[in-house]
Image (cartoon, rainbow, N blue to C red; front, side):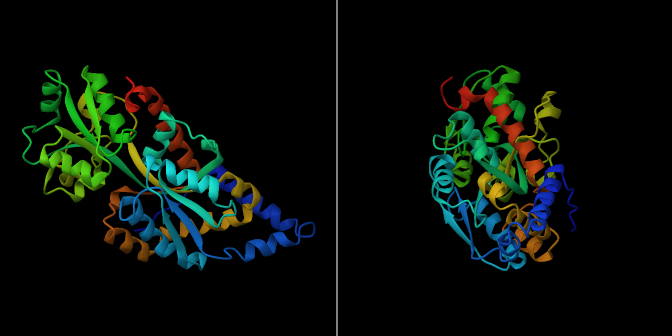
Length: 339
């Protein structure tokens, strides 16, 4: 499968900056050599979640191919804790802004985390997401033994009593999705953070919670033990693997934007400013990976959903950031548990 990259104005400007830097070699003779020698060592990548999770699997699949184009290895460092805050604090406070240090995050939950409580030691604008790998919509699901057969059953029961909802973290796109539904139909849900996708699925299967919300890729992988009732996207791209569940907007006549988790590489803004030549190399080689059959094979082996593979650059990541933070502000009190 071939993916066509659409260059954005921001991509063009970054390329122009790199050309300008090379043209100034008479003034700064080290600039060209610096770009030619990049990378000078392995690329270190902070992953603000636990080893073995969805972000880690995608990172390994992608970096395993990307290293061919950069002619270097990637060294991951795992810093789970505080819904991703620990990893970002380490990255922004202890990693040099020289383009040899990146972060690979799950933009949705981690940006919503900043909505609930802004970072203390840096600004969100101090780092930039530049390489989106995939977008994974949230969904509502139950265990196979649940009495709920449809999302309408949940709504009907929710009007009688307050239902408990398992979620991997409070500040999550899927959490926003169920809160938006509750607002639409006039009912409240009690969100229960279960610390990770596996526990969120288990909560629904065992009946610990009435139902759960999570990224649909993980739910599709557990299809034999769960039943999907609603998808927070414009279309149910996985069809039968998500039980042909309806979408939020179609079923309830809403206009909510797709509520997606999106895994992407980020970098210090200071690194872009100081080393536009190096950053251009990262951008160019990042794009090459998506047309490499080796990556497609690795992505599938890592249980990635091809329908969710969605390459994007700075412009796509900026739009995602704006959209998710705007809707997060709307439900901020509920996501923080202060409502």
